[in-house]
Image (tube, rainbow, N blue to C red; front, side, top):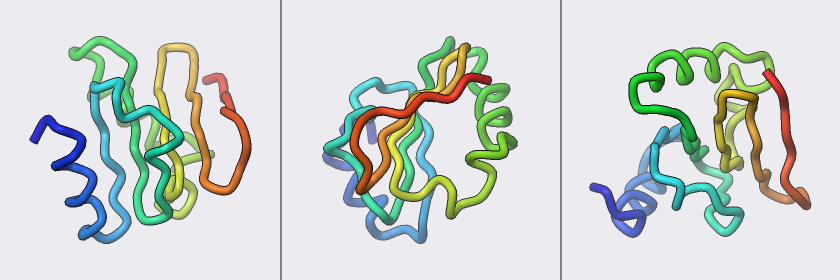
Length: 94
């Protein structure tokens, strides 16, 4: 399922998932939803495992509750994200 239109309805049926992708189309505030977290990995494919691990171990996003309602972009320099019911994009450096 590479198409956003197929993936998003599936996420609505899962219990509080965090979805990781290399597709930049998932990093947009219009995709915010309280029931899931979208994480766009803006890195090289061979770095995915390291950055998923790094992201999930970071104090700001370690728990499921901290991640819900966010659409995020993970980069070498840090994390940018949109959060439900908040204005503007936020940024955290590693």
